[in-house]
Image (tube, rainbow, N blue to C red; front, side, top):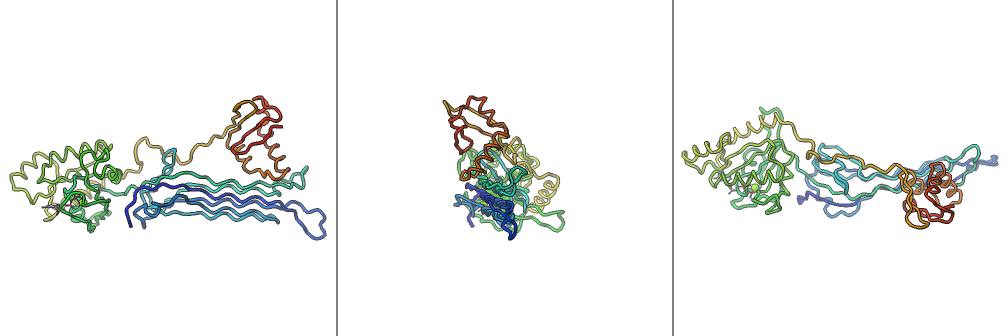
Length: 412
Ligand SMILES: Nc1nc2c(ncn2[C@@H]2O[C@H](COP(=O)(O)OP(=O)(O)OP(=O)(O)O)[C@@H](O)[C@H]2O)c(=O)[nH]1
Ligand SMILES: [Mg+2]
């Protein structure tokens, strides 16, 4: 499978089923009561994180994902069936955004999130019977499901992120540290997508995951080379290992890398410096670099020198570090978007008024405009909710046009 770490598509919950208008027709019972059942709720579109997937490729070309609609209610107080949910499996580490910001962070296997909830089913005429209205002949319609445009972003989850210039030996190190066998080549940009390796030694308390990403070059954070597109994959690692080719201007390389990490907002992340390819150095140069880079780990991915110590050091360091759960400080972790719950009546011009408010818009959507009784019910609800008096206060007169959501009617 191709590695895809971003996808955009529209999700739409299923419409709720309509309520039913029905009257009980039992033998020897002259006047049966209303027994129209409720419509089923629409199904939801749900994302679920799985470890079986490591890319967003299945969604690369999706445009619209829908859930099933609820079925209509029927007589004898039978409720309609709930619409089927559509469950989309996404890799662990997927962040979910819509136009307003982040909706969810699916960083645990099995975590799920409803991205478009199904619409509520409408009530049947049985629900509207009262002592004064014993045979209501109207019902509610089902509500449409939620709809939004999603952007999914995958961030590979790892404990240690290897960052370095192209050709520094990151992939070789991953191979030396773990059982992973990434591609290694004597040319820059051998690695094109992130690769993970699990380090699991018998003495370790728990295994840890190392991520190898494509090499960075100066200006990566502005989009040069493979860009900082891949830096985000190590943004949540507990520890960064800055890998330098000891045989080729490690000071210059370090300066470039630190600048890129800074530009990407990662300079405060715990990190250590690894001087690789020390097999190419004579003892004089080794001593010199030991002074230049105090605290750096000296290794050779090719001969294996120092690799064991590095592995133990990574294990020790990651053990003491909390994994980063929040994606970025200050970023919005809102789960539901706020809805306008109040009631607002505005004049949109001579003789035209608009009414907004979640509750009243729902009532309008549920109204069965084909039924005079349904329309009467709608008007009673508007009276009850104070919409009519608000309209009068705003100056509405009989014959004026009133809009509620997509519904337009005459003020009476
Ligand atoms: N002599 C020596 N060569 C090494 C060492 N580590 C890696 N190399 C060589 O350096 C070259 C680049 O190695 P890679 O592991 O592909 O480097 P990389 O950092 O993953 O490179 P990109 O994926 O292109 O960013 C290869 O020819 C490796 O054989 C080392 O410790 N000593
Ligand atoms: Mg590589």
